Structure formats: C-alpha cells, structure tokens
Length: 320
Image: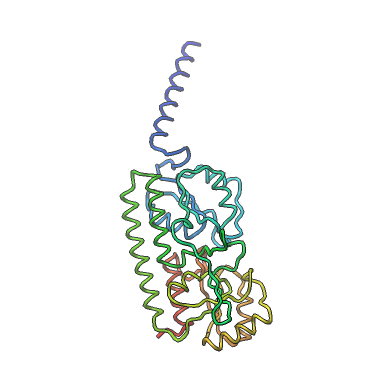
C-alpha cells in the first residue's frame, strides 16, 4: 500500500514538474500569460490602454489601472493592482503622470516596460508673449512630470504615433512569436494617426482666431502642432475660481483675439467655465483631454473623440 502510494505521488510530482517546465517554456514569467496564451498587458490609463489594444490585437489581454470616469492624476492603487503589475507580461505607462503607478512599477521589477515619456520628447509649456502669460501646458501641479514638463503628449497625433512605435518594440520583446502581427498593427495605427494629423492641419488652416480658452490646460502639444494658443482660465486646479485680475485679463484677451468659446472637459466640473462664459458673453463647449472614455464622451474611442475635438475647435476658431 505504502509502496503504491509512493509510486503514485512520485508520478504526480513528476507530472507537475513537467507541467511547470511546459508552462515556463511558453510563458516569459509566471502569470505573464492568460490560460489561453495571451500576453497580459497592464496599461496605466486610457491612451496607453488604447495603444496596447490596437497594437497587441488578439494576442494580448489588456487591463487598465484607471477606471472610466476617474481622474488619472488622482489614482491610488489597490494591493491587488500592485500585484498585477508584477505579474504583467508587459506594462505601458507614462512616467510623471501618476505617481502611484510610477512607484509601483519600480517595485514590480517588471522586465518589459514601455514608458511613453521616454518614447517622444516632452516639453515645458507656458511662455510670455506680448505681456500675457500663455499657458500652453498642464496646470495640475501634480500632473507635471520631472522638470515641470507637460505629460499630455497623446493629444498630438504625431507624438502619439512615436509612442505607438515604442510600444510595438516592447510588445515584440515580451512576445517575439507575434512580432510580425504587432508590426502590421502598428503600421496600420500609425497610418490612421498620420491621417488624423492631416485632418487637424487642413481643418484648422483657414481660421479667424488662433486663441482658445480652456479650464484644463491639457492642449499645449496640440496647440503647438497646429499653431494655436491655449489660454487656461485658472491656476493649479482646473476647478478653482480664477481671480478678479485673471478675469479682467481674460476679458481683454477674449476681445483682442476674437475668442468665441470657453472650453470645459467631460470629467471636471463645468461651473467655472460656465460662470466665466456668462461674464464674458461667450459660448461654452467641450474639449476632451482624452484621459478616459465614458458614456459622456463625444466618441467611442481615441479617434472619435479627437475628431469631436477638431470639430469643436473649428467652430470656436471660426474655421472657413
């Protein structure tokens, strides 16, 4: 009886060792693949999730750490999410945007990591022009990465395409067997982003004004790409009340630059924008910083929302 049990347990132990060997042969790390062999990819927030899904296609299972409707800058991670980072086959994030994510990635020791901030050049937005402070960058103090650089690179289709190419390389390293598919998907995505860039360039070419007002100064890269000037209403907090002095400045600016519209975003409270628009007798509209997609978004994905942003800018800037 004892001998028989010993033979059975030895056989089972041998089988489980073989099983583990087989698993490790097809998996870059434990938990890095799903049961059906897909690469587990963790993305920090929507623009990174979109790239991972578009490039990875049917070979990846993507988890987004930031749920729809949550302000990415304010994200706190649960212990489960932190653990998930360590088990990812690949991670796609933007360093400097979400401090909690940055810290967890360092702790995770993950091998295949794409950092969007390292895949294109980040700039510092905000310059003095004609005595006015032109804020063409982010006003969230806690969303500015090292050196006060603006993280909102995904709003410029050209920079976003550069990031896509870098994400492609990371996924190919994490899952070399599907390298050719990732490349094909990346080429298709880059082509669509090139097309979107042309739509913005052509659509904003003939306009009666260059300046737009917004509560969330996320559109610095987009403004720079197409020769526009973004003016943010208030200081560090997009929901803070602007000072009387700032309102006077904006009044002058709106008159001088033929501004017709104050933009607010889908996630933040529109009260400040609406009050200011009332004071200045301007219209309000939505310009979406595309930090997440919700039922209120004017489009189902990145391209849909960007086209809605283009239409809103054309209307506000008097495009002909």
